[in-house]
Image 1 (cartoon, rainbow, N blue to C red):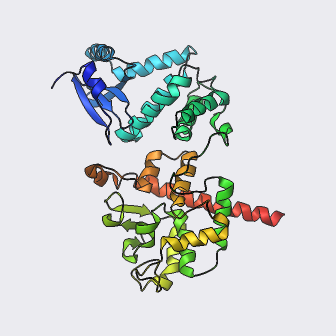
Image 2 (cartoon, rainbow, N blue to C red):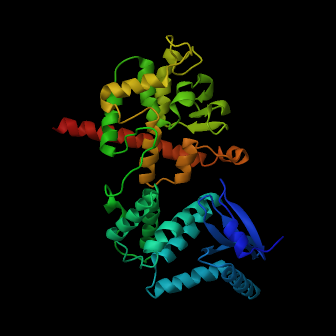
Length: 403
């Protein structure tokens, strides 16, 4: 194994998945898809394999990282866990009233890492190191307020980057942790920015993402009357985030397990070329149970006698949407962007959302591994999403009756 050099480190390019480059003595560089290069150290303490982080290159140079390894090895020789010593130093700093946003954020990210796969943790850390820390990292976490966060969002947007909302969601989690750990006494300022930061829909597909307009859309769908198969498709479409053409309109009854509340789409119809299992909410299951007597004798769930393919098309759903007040605003594919935007705003883990959307994974081995990842978390998220859409409709109907 060759030791790292600055020239070699600068030459490392991001790939589709995180990868490691070892230096020696347990030190390695984790290169993330975003391009960040994070120093990590693997070591053994009390018979257990552990990992600690040293920060990002080039902020932490190769020489600095090696010096921190030497210090960690010295602590180990004295029977001290380096990660525990680092946490103790952070607590001491916080106790002196110098708890910066960056210090608290790194502490929270390290706690969060225990529940996440390394790739997700690396992406979250990279987002904060690249965007948040340079702007508000040095500020006391207790003093960061809405104008500071708006400045952060504006700087991100000015670079043409579409992640401002997700970064603010992570900042909100840091503020809530700061409150829980006694480093902040005022409320999380992130919710006060509602409406001040732009939502971004998918570039190629119009999508409704404003909650008020989403309410209008759901009211339209619930009120739609016509062919029962089209009605079922319109009601089912917002609940599953699947691609409307190959995945949704071509759904087969043989892929549906109503008892387990799952829909398993075969690889040949999924963009990732890997089998994709969609957990179904109770609302989605109810729609399918209602449709079963209508199309249950057909191979396709959304069957059509008038189509040569045996199933209704994406265009059928799109025409229903256009004719009922959403022409130019919403497409059949736009339900994916709608869910992505609003679930992100509600604080759901981006990794769960991406997995549910079945975004393409270039590494097929990793795709095969990840297709079952987060199933329980996704099931809870999908139920929460269905309940949220129902709540929008119920609230609007109550408001209408009160007039």
